[in-house]
Image (cartoon, rainbow, N blue to C red):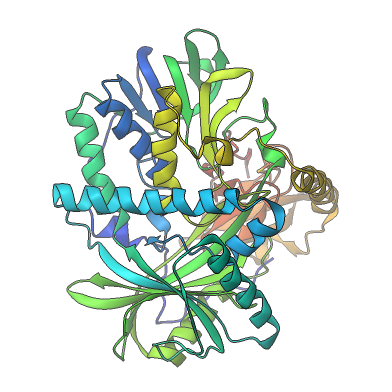
Length: 512
Ligand code: FES
């Protein structure tokens, strides 16, 4: 069981997205009847909204469906850097593929950036879009070679970049690579514009509508939980962050999930611009933004596998320490965490679900870089649906395989088997009556091991901690008050409701 939840005074008690707080989004109804459309887009994050908008412009009748509210998943909880500088990606891709592949990955991400910039400029979208230089840096001697290799990859691939021995901000670094001409914005303000245009072009949006599966005929029938309702569509595009099905194509064994944390800090010192990411053991990400008319900093980092942190609140504390030490901190108006998905070779899966299902498409695995990868996904999915050629189709094709992905696939299978075994046998050390208000964990209750959370008013919520996706054991996340699964990242509220898939069914409630 975790330590008692104890919020330091500077940190907000509950997680909240700044982007969603400062932007009022329209609301949409649940699906209440069977409908027929040209295309159904399942999942209303940046990839889904962009795809739906682009297809509606092409004259398609499109339904955009989300299990919760639109833009309430990772897109609402991002640091919102629009950048093609993605850690050590280019040296890694160069070591696994011929140079055309990393080149294509770079160009696709620049295309995503260009599309956002053109939309903002053409339509005058008020979304705090600002061009910035992006920096990748290290302050660890043992990482310097990796950073130099990344810079060599820039040279080999013709990616604009410069080497530096220090940073223009008071953060220690012994080496850095700058990439000019990248950008930052408020993604929710930007995507709100696309949503409005989508509706103007005849688009339909349904919120709080969970699609659980599909029958792949002509048309495809995408059905809701317990097959109560269905959407009949000629094309189905799944942009649900994590795909909601286990078969076909076995995506659950080809994706890795990581959580990370962010704070919004009102600094005591002036920030001299730029967007920053390190490659060190303690991950740190930085950019500025505007909140209530003043400059704030978004400080991110502290990655870990879901369900694999003893005290998730500590990650916020580490970021708070870093921000306070580096820039001074007058106030922390927001904290949030997010979940990111990475494919086995770090290149997103964007394209046909599998060779057998040519009218179903998928986009997932944006490798923490959803603003550019997600926007590019919209462009590529549109071209897939229109059967239009696109020079990057093969690079992002979900059906690609190489030796590395096969061996990692096997490793992922072992990881899940280990979680299934160790999770089942992990003990529960505390009795339920020891739980204090606003505390949760796995406890012993009537001789059984159960998940328990006592809310601030003292009400007790008991759940079976077995994940409803494929049976791994979920773990208590004290900072978000959720049950998180280490196998594929499903998350559940303390009442058992699904917060993030791939699970679609809630945790089983246990009555007192
Ligand atoms: Fe797959 Fe839990 S077993 S997310």
